[in-house]
Length: 306
Ligand SMILES: [Fe+2]
Ligand SMILES: [Fe+2]
Image (cartoon, rainbow, N blue to C red; front, side):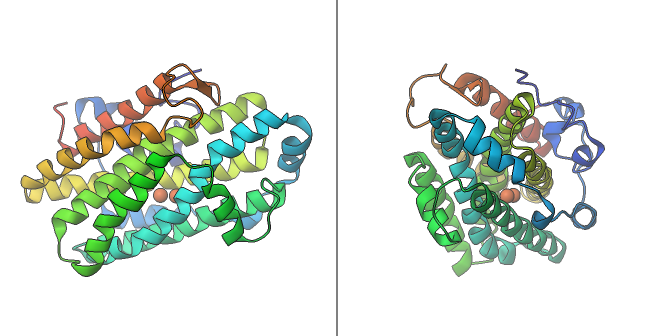
């Protein structure tokens, strides 16, 4: 198992094209050319993909004929926070988009809303065609999946993120709250939690030779997430340069969120065991990977000395 962020996948030209600092060694020295908002939009146009093009026939066979009951449960558990998480982030992004202070930022965030909707559609089609839960309908699948989330997931989305997004819906000119929301959404939820889980889940399936349709789609999801995180890094760097007080808002928010984010990365059946493995990786290794990615991004934003 490699805990380094450099894999054949993340060395791909299309992954590096996002300018996500976590993928680029220059970030360790604070030397990364982040894309501008218009460039990120153009990249989105070039990086389209379609859920309907994926083929889940082998995935269905793997799921029902190759996996034992306990493996099916562990995999279903591991994916539940992604399925529900995609639905939550899609729903929260509207007020954040409207609160962005510049038109080019808003246009990029509109593309991200479309991406998050596509990610929900991806999970819904995978769950449906593989028959992961034995229930029909998107709402029903989301409800059944939500039963497997840990309590920290609810705190992170329903309290910490929702509170800021509700405020932005009422007061879209509140830039400080937008800085806090982007810190939670782009740096923690996408940058630390989603991309870390995606990295290990894709690696595990590639090593085991399982779920080829899922791996193809989830790799596209990960590339989208790197582009979203690159937007977040660019936005936070620009906001800090405009007003150094935003630096405190980012630090304060990261400190508030850290213990909750840490809890989300742990499996519910072994919350205190640092060596318990999920997808072949311990909680310690997962945390180290997430923190290294965060540190690189913070160096490029200018919050941590390079
Ligand atoms: Fe997503
Ligand atoms: Fe995203």
